[in-house]
Image (cartoon, rainbow, N blue to C red; front, side):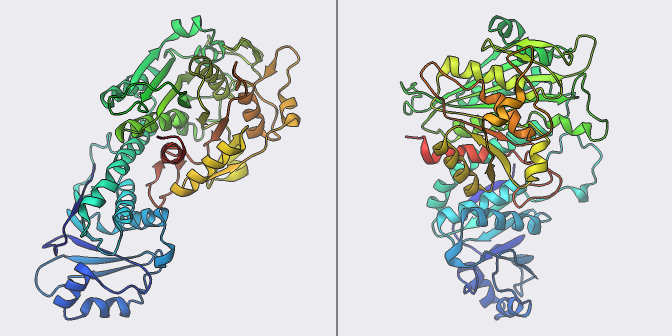
Length: 500
């Protein structure tokens, strides 16, 4: 991973110098020093290029100093000084990464930024640097990124380091989630993903893995029904971070917050098989589970003062002589029966059993589940927003605000009795699909039927991330591919409302 450092200001002797500039801002610190050394050439070059510091503007000046020093200076526009946001600074950091990736080292002249702003710029730069190259064996040397270290020059280096530490832990969680989602399905099957989850024990997370035998005892007929067509055994992984009790990690007496992820490591659709074109994308049908694993790593990595549980149901949905059939009826861990109309509507079956197990065992303060659940949500919202469904206005508002703060946007969708009637079955308690109209909504209605506790209503949010878990193009802080949508959003939710 790219090395990020915060240091006292000094003109670099080589590499690139990055200059974050707000609109109409004067040159200060290192920028002012290098401009003076060049006889005012830097200011003249910026003026000649029409650089005003507007958001999204960039300007490159080659060999800015007359003798030695940085090979190039890159000015990055931040927009109006009074309107700087963490999200905007991260995007600017991502833009800077593209400009300096050919250099071994780069220095960011961060004297004009507050410590937290410098850290946000660094976070965007680091997140954009992600690259999944584990299986590239013949890549040309000139095609490989060369950047190894970025130093942020600031007079407030200690404060910037302090602001950076938790951000770096969250970045580690994001990278872990992206790695999991990017892995090919012949490598990352349920057993292997469960083993990857166990690596979180190094961070102090308690990890428990349940296999088919344990799940049969718990009555998880819905999850096991999805898995029965594959030679790969399913797994249910329970991760616990007990951070609310103080530095020794003593478990607090309060209820934990809970996060549940759909982990279909490959989804053929089962007997209701998908079209061949694009089926390779179904390796990331476990992105909800990947986000939960990354979130638990982030919370533990930054030593979050919260008790949290993360549960992921891991299955492979394959067609075979033993596969689940359309028309089968399965019994869930909650005791409710489901008529399986379409075996490609499998994620909600997995979530039904895991959600019931979560609330029955932990009785959490709230539950948030994440799933690449429906193509219908992409039809409704495209790739700009995740679909959000909730039975609790306060929790929904908190999730939406956290998503907006970190650039992971959610749009609340409706729930209601009219949609719930669409999943009424003639022979069982419910069926697993409700037809094409409102497909993402009826999927959420199905999940909601398993949101209940002995103590009363359970605050719950369902995030359908089918359109946001993977990007076909570069994003401001993520290259094309796995986005790890949900890791930063839910970490922010915890940080803003549930730590202490």
